[in-house]
Image (cartoon, rainbow, N blue to C red; front, top):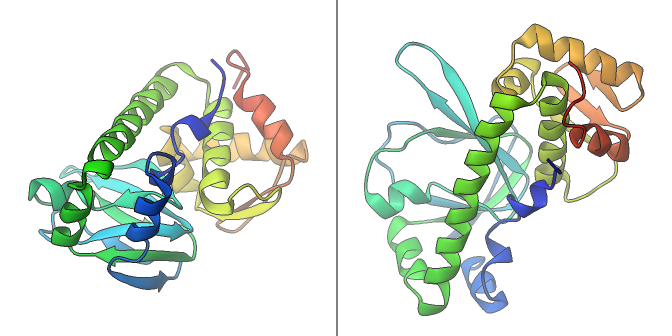
Length: 228
C-alpha cells in the first residue's frame, strides 16, 4: 500500500481553473488566526466558510458520551465550513487552527454563488469526492496498519499541510491529539515517538514534534508490514 497523501490532500486549487481560484482568493475578507483558535464550533448554525490560504487546521467531532475524534487535517487550499453553507444544517464538527493561519472568510451566500459557476461546479464535486476517498483511506489505515506506520503517515500528512514541503518543520500538536488522529492510545504514541526520536527521524518538545528526516519517515510510512 504505497503512501501518497498528496493524491488526497492537494486542496481545491488542484481542481479549479487558475482564474476561478484567483477569484475565490479575493472573495470575503482576509483574516489571520493564531494556533489554537477555534474557527467553527460543532452544532452551530453559522454558515460562514473559511478558505485556507496558509497553515493547517484540525477537524474534530465530539460525541455526547464524551468521546472525541480528530476526523481530518486541512491545509492551504482547503475549504472548511462548506457543508453547513451548502445544506443549511448545523455544523457537524469543530475546526481549530493547528498553526498560524491565514484564510478568506466568506458568507454562505457568496460561497454558494461561487460554486454555482459552470466552471466551478464540476471541479468542486471532484474535490469533494477526493475528500470522501481520503476519509475511506483513513478508516482503512486505522483498521489494518500498525501504530508506528499510522503515526509516520500522520506526521507526513501534517508536515505537508503545515509546511508546504519544507524539509524541516515543527508541528504544534499534543501527543493526545496525535493519538486521536491515528486511533491509538496515548501510551502507544509516546512509545512510537520515542523510537523515532532515538533513530534521529524526529525531535520532540512539549506539544511539538520537529521532523528531521522526511525521507526516513516516508520510508516507514510505506512499510505495510512494519511491526509496532
